[in-house]
Image: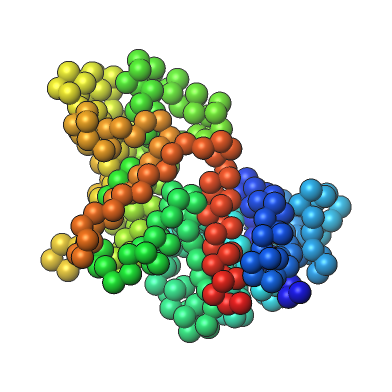
Length: 335
Ligand SMILES: NC(=O)c1ccc[n+]([C@@H]2O[C@H](COP(=O)([O-])OP(=O)(O)OC[C@H]3O[C@@H](n4cnc5c(N)ncnc54)[C@H](OP(=O)(O)O)[C@@H]3O)[C@@H](O)[C@H]2O)c1
């Protein structure tokens, strides 16, 4: 049976959840694609890299398998893999070093899948064109709304439609904080509760200040609307200045405050906004509680389609599925 060698660049929450899911679905992959997926390399920042051409069992990863002197770029340049999964932390301001990892793998003619939205927000067009030139797949489903199909939906199901606008709630942390504040919880306590539940970062400023939402909006616009925009070009306001009084006033008027993202092309120019917005209590964004999110895709041929991501336990499996679904598409397309 044909072996498909996978190099994991980054082995944190997503890398490990993906590796476990891959093990669960090995029989399905063998039967459906006639392929044996093997994780042959794992790269980290602190432990260096583990390389094993016969495959690494995710249940049996130990520290002594890692060579501290080997860094991710050395492993990526070796080319000893068929698919590289880029799962390192995002740098919202540059998309690096993930973009360099991806470019290097593509230049070697390797397929790349990623959950890291930084490269899509900053370097999408260059990486997409390089993948096309090299005749390989570059896939990134998990970068927005985890495994909920957004890119795949538009690329495969809404074929022929021109996307005229994308909008929605893209950041779970801010939606959770606003929802908690409506219940009378303070901003600080809501952040703390989110941390306790494991989805709010130690430093939540990238979420609270709207940067994460701006990066996701940018990624969606670049891919779905074929524009060139970067997160710093988004007209962005976070939720740090929203007070309990603002929320109470909105409630009195039959409204809720939501961090709404919207992207469209105006006079030939891409325009993106991330802003706390008053929405009617019975409108779609208003019913997105806690960690739910949604995206509405407006098209020229069939109006709007909305996809909702519902909370799911364990949450990380949503993201792992996004990465797995990319791998399955690589296997389907490339045999
Ligand atoms: N977590 C989620 O729910 C979620 C959802 C959607 C998308 N994503 C995206 O998925 C990516 C991974 O997220 P995560 O939660 O798995 O992050 P994480 O838990 O912080 O893990 C990151 C991994 O990358 C490694 N790493 C960091 N810098 C590296 C470098 N320069 N070279 C090689 N490896 C490096 C880290 O090494 P060490 O082990 O040494 O620290 C770690 O293994 C991020 O881009 C994130 O935005 C995450």
